[in-house]
Length: 271
Ligand code: MLT
Image (cartoon, rainbow, N blue to C red; front, side, top):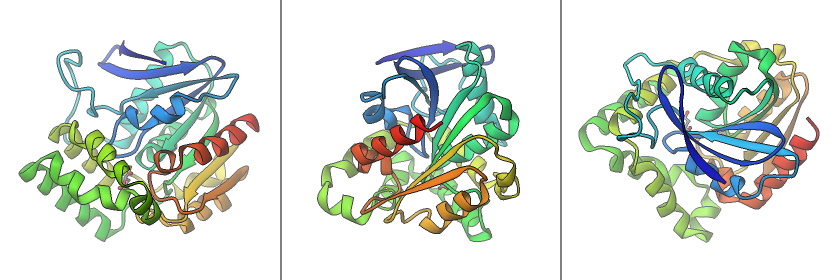
């Protein structure tokens, strides 16, 4: 596995890369970074090449990332455009897109913007719908909290809900590992993403037009996005299958890396 900084026309972007063969672009959840995919990057199935970028403003802040490109009004489509620009930089033609939670929202946007580039979709612990009015108000509260108290407060608020009940009980160290992934992010990166999450469009009307093979993966202890949302996506997308992992929460690829990777591998081999 190697980490690289790609110098795209509009900004620099860090990504991990591992394996060789058909390309799978892995898009991480909020408020983590490409580090979320380390378990999968260490077990890439034969015949596949995993590419995992940081979404704009996550982790990759600092001297090597001179233009983070963060601005109020940045949208989920902008994150998708970054992934498309990375794919162009790497000279990828068609590729599989795998997104978990916020990464799934970005995957929907990418699929809308460049349907011919998407050879398959993996949608994990995500939903097609937009935020409800309550959800949008919650984003505004989180924006205020991030501004006042910083990433530590966001971690304090979110980490317990990101992990399933069984994981919290049986893998107590994972909460701290996730907290460490969250707190290295900048306030600007978090606040910008919260605005994009709050204002993202409803992807439900387009589900029926998704022509590529799709695998939906979730966990039955996901406290952020219920299993019913995964079922809605599977029913709405013409060629989709669903795997529900038992005793697993929202960060399913970290909570149950072996089971999640097995589901992924079976899905990829069918695409
Ligand atoms: C995520 O895991 O990316 C977020 O929890 C998604 C969301 O809050 O809608």
